[in-house]
Length: 159
Image 1: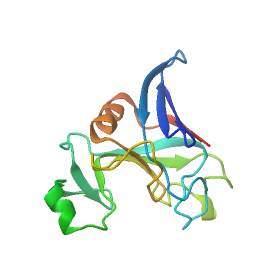
Image 2: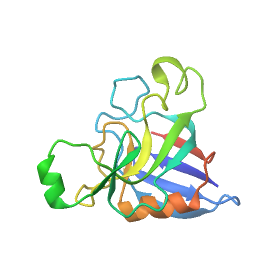
Image 3: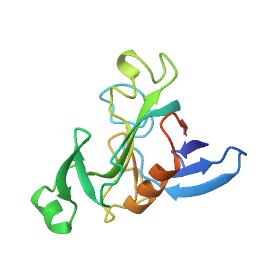
Image 4: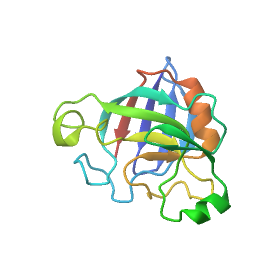
């Protein structure tokens, strides 16, 4: 299995071992576009792997900070109490670049930039770039994807 994320079409596709597309999801990548530099708030391109899977068994909408569950479950009321919070919900697939100088090591290291595929409030639109670098998904979609992919799965991010 492998994942391909298209920044231009704001889609994520999951391919099976036979190369056939088995799932397709609408996503939201970075508002600032594509880029690898630390502090750019852009979505990094190139080949990555899923280095860590976080949140197995958590309820849909479970909130995370620093990759740890907070005990909160997202609601509109909770969101109203923290209007500027960048919500990381349900599951986290933490990406690690595999291309030294492009998305691994130094100022372009995706893992050190905390680039994830993660859930976001269902009130947030998909298909529109709005994140600060991560790949956002609907909570049900990221939970489904999480259950389908192991750590080590290749993730290609293309413009």
